[in-house]
Image: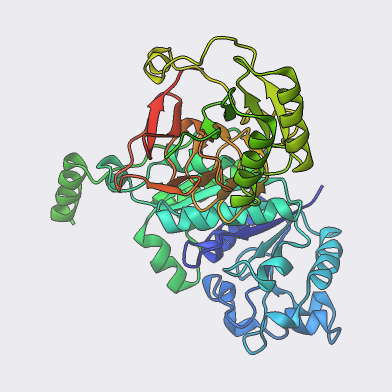
Length: 265
Length: 215
């Protein structure tokens, strides 16, 4: 049974592509056959996060226009054979693909892959409408920030109007220390407003940035809090019941340990 | 200045029509027509007036009914024979939860929304609105009558949008960005407190007040 998932958020910069890349790699690590589709035509960057830019030959537009077969355009991941990327064009714009094209594409890919994950562009215009067209499930990514939550709310409304009722939430870039001190919206407030099933709480982690620069998603990294959080989300997508993790805080004890460790090195 | 022969009062439960029983039918008819023509469209079609029938002649009552029906309005006879209780007495009564329809239950439509109203959505209704869910920030509810939220109200709500000052807004947790009733606007405090009980916003003494209610 295969599933088509769209990762969306409304607001930009909350971590849609990062989430897509991490879920893709995470599911592939579990042995699933996964294809990632970048629909952010003109502003593609999912290939960068996966470190696959130099391997791109054809793109989504070529497939949609019928210049090449899907198989030819898919880029295989370096490490995980069962993970493929369908990149988009950096020169065309969103009008080059329409919802019907993507729907047909998803139905084609569905036959062969366990998971089709679509990276949606920011906004609620044509690009968004195209990206969600073929999806069974939507994952809304938000941040503990009023504007991100407001936009997520709007997106959930839009998804509802497009009859996408299976919607899940990931709260990204949480700073536990700030939540504790009351400077950041807490998870209960966000869940209260958005009122959809939350499948992940990912802390803000510098490793996400450094790993993105290297083109290796953080999900395999056991030392990273965000990596663990993404692994948990992957588990939950596969139907496992995993409790939300407690975030480690940079408390006094932790700092002391760090200082101790440093002095030893 | 002589006392008005006909007075229309916007009460808590809708409009009340007070008629001077000493006036003749012709005088009353002229006065009602004048009042209605002063503000055409103020009373939505189907609005019913409660008629104080203390000592009115039956033919006069019938006449008033006919005049109002010509204007697409209706009339209800007040059940109580005694004069209405003084406002002071009323305020002593325990706060009760009643959806106020402006006294015209059957004439007014009631919009029931059975989901959370999310940011960017707008719900407009000529009558009252019942929301079985939350109203999220960025959402708008505009109702000719009252608004009842069985959840948390964080958006903008406008009750009595066409001038019904008796309209109210009720919510389990009332923390909207703005409350508008008729032509009055109340803005939320910049730092919002979470309320633990249901509240009702209504117009009292020329301003919007919010009071806790039980339900």
